[in-house]
Image 1 (spheres, rainbow, N blue to C red):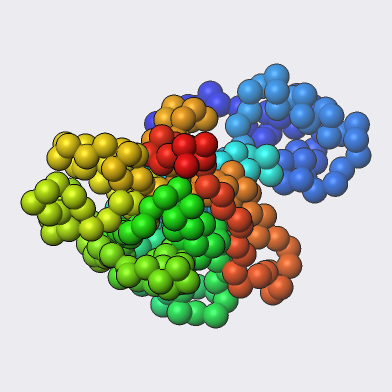
Image 2: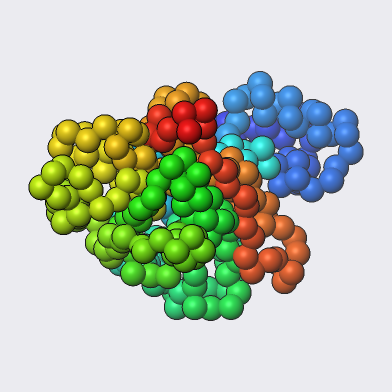
Length: 336
């Protein structure tokens, strides 16, 4: 229920000793004399006046709100991305509306429609669905990692192909003779698919036969991983592979747990490298050795491109570099 005693613009004008129009100009960042602006800002502070963002948006056709659509905020990578995007927006005096889609296509479309109806000033989206036909040119949108069929949505991503190359070459450098690749992913094309390409090209370079688990599903991951390991396990407790490059840190960590439960030592028997750079307790240790994405810089780039005044010249694809970091599931350099 609305507080009937809440101060209004008229109260601010009366307190500041200026016209209602002057208060409106200050609130909407329209130039006024410095002395008038100071009076209005002081009155707003003293009265604890809160701007009605929705009402102002109806008048100015701007809300200073950006929507972020992500699969969920449980995955540490997604929550970290949301954190840094919010911080980058706040520095620019924008607010964030967070939408978690759970990877459900219908839910993502509903959020797109909701964003359009509420007149948000832009959308940053990380989706697992083909929603390109539902993206309107009337609202700025930046895609993270996902390709849209249209030709006007800019995309920001890490250099996933180089990440695949770095991970595979690092495993080989650390002594692996038979590195495997595991992935559970969406069937919708995205830049992250190039991690697999980097693995295949590196195996070809070193004449190593690829060993691959690649599923377009997210259910029963643990069972799929266990079945894969059993398929490549021999009666003498040896494996066809001595290293794993995982498409994500999450699945690298799951593979590590299953291998350890089966009696294999990590990293002595099997070395593992994930992808993302997810850390325990924020800035502490990695869960696994990983190809780390520059998450803060990715967030900043998404926001900068989205809010750019040069909408017609926004880049189609922006790639940021990745790097390998030790996280305990690979041998240290000096051990080889």
